[in-house]
Length: 77
Image 1: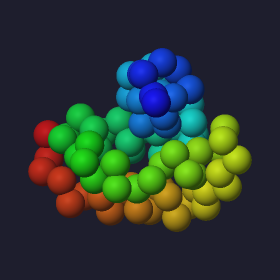
Image 2: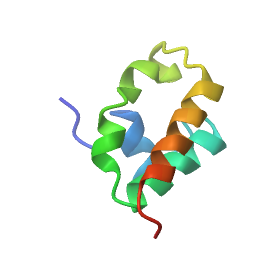
Image 3: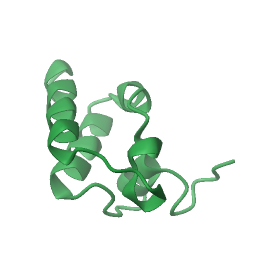
Image 4: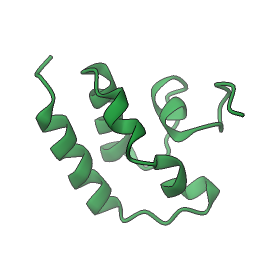
């Protein structure tokens, strides 16, 4: 079970530990979505299965497009 330490989950690593997981564009969007209150939307993305550190092979362009669309649906800060 994850306990919030580095390496437990990509969302925690990106937001809390400021680690690079998917690269600056995607990581920055994930932080922005979280800051805007979109944490539950991020949870639905199953980023753990996409995490390259655990064997995931995400299409980063598609992930970035999905994150931008998600961010654009949230209220402005």
